[in-house]
Image (cartoon, rainbow, N blue to C red; front, side):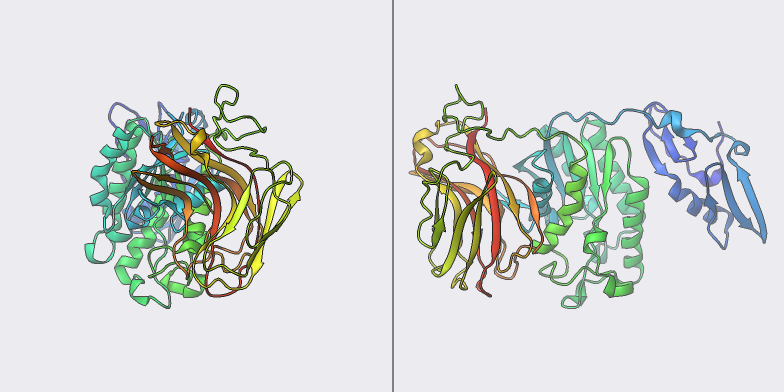
Length: 497
């Protein structure tokens, strides 16, 4: 079957690709390979038209040598004008709810093996918003600083061998500048990574490269051809890469500084160098990603629903902690704390936070704490809720994670993080893995209302542990007096059975 020369038919081995009103579609699966959004550009280039043609429901409309031409789809050989029969294929079935991330330094900074997930990385923010629908392991970070998309490609083999069911790809900013790559080269690399992962049964999410540069870091602005390539890659990711087994995420609506005009920079304060996110930038990068993750699979995390005893025989969550619902009022708020705190729970102010206050109360089914007082003298932590000495209830060699549900009211100021984790002290060393570890004193959390689930990285309980502490903490800035209202419930250190 012949197709118009301008249509640039893609090829897939052992599959039939047909041209439809929605674009190039795989006939057997209904996968949309190239959106019709790109077809007008192809037509314009082929005929050297002054204006870009338009495509409506049943025709192509263009002006050629001053003459208006309307081509009905049924006049184009091989063009199928009823694509719906090809678009009803079922969505890709996820192999599991494990997720990996593949990219450059922006991805690499999402987590570290010793600290856990970082709140200046997009994955922690996205998973909280998505209520931990996916399990992210620290070993599933395939980001590497300085990498172009060409350098990223070989690591698709590592992703495939990891056994994850979903992979997030974010790359392309290093293709610009010194690398001198074209938009087409970037798109070829992204498409090859996508196709290799899909062929291995892995669902793919591709994020657009972030805007870059601001008034403080003008050297990170792109200009001329490289800016044009950057914008082209952004548009082509959204138009060409979605399919039944690949979703795309546009982070520009939350990151782009409209005031930067033609420079297309990122909002000032969102990065620490015009390129790499601070806490604020990471939150707004993860925000649209979390929305996409929310559409992909039901919430599967097992949250404690009653004050059961810790042993797994009577509690399938295998809790090593007690009273996950914060029932009762016999908790001990500790120095700097006051008010009503659930049984078995405590709180604490670290050195440097003398004069900072924590006021506890019960709000419906939530345990609430209001943080106030005077400026901290060091960027130290407050333990909002904690239990200590849990090593006596933990099984050596078993795997554990901390979980909780939270709400943070809008208006938080001079708060660097809200992070959950377990601190394990053992003869062999200390394990302190957090979800959402803070960045630096100049990177407070966004003063917007947030809510969701927090899940710490998993760890294996050492046999020589002498103390285990479950902690929901926040670090404070030394730039001014802190203010925040946090609510928490269903908090536990649970054995992963």
